[in-house]
Length: 318
Image: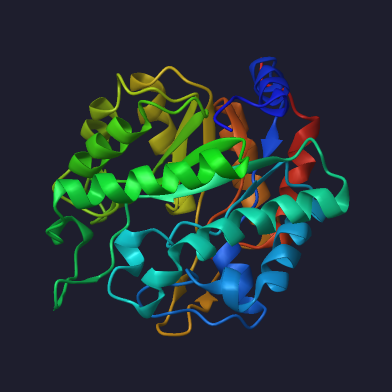
């Protein structure tokens, strides 16, 4: 049903009063740690049908660690990612089970106040039209194909009882335009997560996927878009603070931050040189001082990081 849940209304009112909320960390990272198969092009896209119980357990682990929001395993399960795989025929089952797993985890633990965020990206399969690309922004996807995929994923969320739509890795202006056109008709609350990177020691902040797009320009591009919360995600901890300053200058919304950490060596998706939970907490205390209301983790980070971040819950933003 396409309505704003009472759970979300209560949650968002607490944020506006200054409460700190904890988002989960990397779902796919934790699935890989638990032995789930990661596809080279579709990552954890089909885990919901291969290892459903494990997916439920991962969500439960994050709730047990103190997460106030858990994220569906849908970052890489749209037809834009599954298009050339044998799993396109299973797209309905994959996405419905992604939502079902999060709902089941919340119900099993009686964690009725926990929000379920439907993860939605504009990620496209690296192999497209028989060619392999190195840059997401170079992949020539037709507008109608993008729109179809976005509309389809949004409909899964509307019918599946998620509380919010969480836009992840917003980095490519053209795709962002098409995505917000698809979001125009939904009543579900939207949170928007941008990703940034510095391509040289003294270079300015740029879009994570395209060094030709300045991070500030990316933010300005979404100034008139409709979302409740925005922030920086899937970006290195050492640039989060600067990104937050940029966001605060352009977008007047409550803030969130959830960095990634380390790097992986394909095809195993095993992250190395990951920040410790204690160091992440140290960084996060500074982000709270900058006004961040929602803090979590992305790729490379796990339930142990979520647990450390719960120490921020006794803080209050004024």
